[in-house]
Length: 266
Image (cartoon, rainbow, N blue to C red; front, side, top):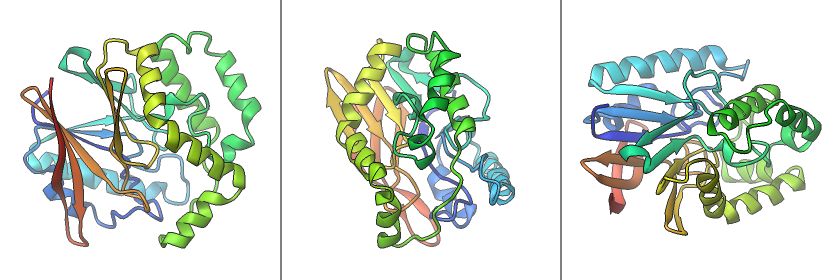
C-alpha cells in the first residue's frame, strides 16, 4: 500500500443532502495521496431513488483516483454494504484499525427510524451469528446484514439547519439516541477495540456524522465526520509513522485539506 494513506468517510454520493454536487471538486483532496481509503457510506447502494446517479458518481470517483495516481480502497458502510472484503483495514501492524463504525452498536444505527421499529428483526439476525460477540469478521458480516435488512425508506431533502434539526428530533426517541451516542462515542469505540482488536491503539471511524477525537484508556478514537449537514468532514493521513488529522475546507469549486488539528507519532 502506497503512502501517504489518506482516510475519508461518508461522502454519500448523490444523497439529497450530500454537499458533494460534483465529483470533480474532490480532486484537490485526492492529489498527492498514494492510497485513499473511503471508509464507508461512499455511495447510496440501497437507496432506489438515487442508486443510478450514485453509481455514476462512484465511477467518476474511481476514475478521478486513477487520474491522480492514487489507489482507491473502499470499506463497506451501512449505506454501501456490498463492498467485498472484511469490513476493516489495519495499518502499522494492527496498531491502527479503520472501519466504518456501524458495528460499534448492537443494531448498527440505534437512532435510525427503521431500527427503532425493527428490534425483533435485529435480534433474529444476531441469533444467526452466534460468534458475532467475539469474532470481528462475523461481527462485520452481521453489520452488513442489518444494513440490508433495515435500510432507510425515506431520505431527508432539506439542507438547511432547521430541516436537519427537525429530521433529528422526529420521532423523539431518535433525538434521545443521537444525544446518547454523541455523548458516549469515545467510550463505545474503546470498548469495541478491547473486544475485537485488543492490539489496536487507534480506531478511525465515520458513520455517526460527528467529527472528533477521544482518548481513553490509552486508546485514540477518531471520527472523520461527513459531507452531510450539519456535520463537517475531516481527513486523516498516515505516513512514515506519523498520523495526522485535520479539517476539510469545502468551497463550491473544490474540497481541500485544511488546517492540521493534531499529529501523533506511532
